[in-house]
Amino acid sequence: MRMNFRVIKKIDARDLRYFLHRLDNTEYLDPEIVKKILETKKEHKTTLILSKNEEKIIQKYGRAINLMLNHAIIEEETNV
Image 1 (cartoon, rainbow, N blue to C red):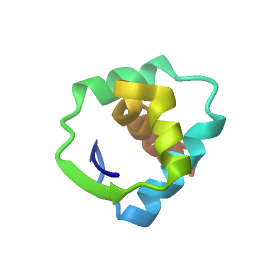
Image 2 (image 1 turned 60 degrees about the vertical axis):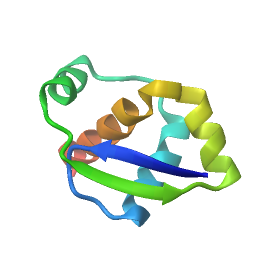
Image 3 (image 1 turned 90 degrees about the vertical axis):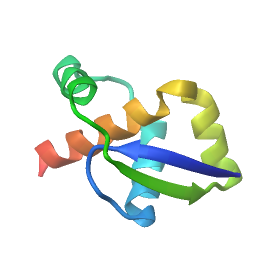
Image 4 (image 1 turned 90 degrees about the horizontal axis):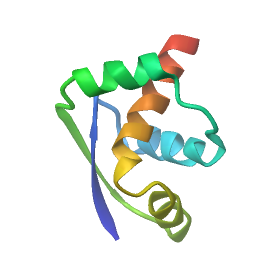
């Protein structure tokens, strides 16, 4: 299955897969980061051909997958 993702920052497919798999262990969303995501334009689009495991992760989060990915990206930036 092929899927397009809208993200805040320009990242390649490898980094997007990293963040997608990182979502499996996400327990908490920081409200300040969510606010920042909702206010920011998602100008970058990355397309992935998904594995079965990645499809399961996407089914778990449904329509919120882009929000979750953007949260993981911003969280990674702030922790560095």
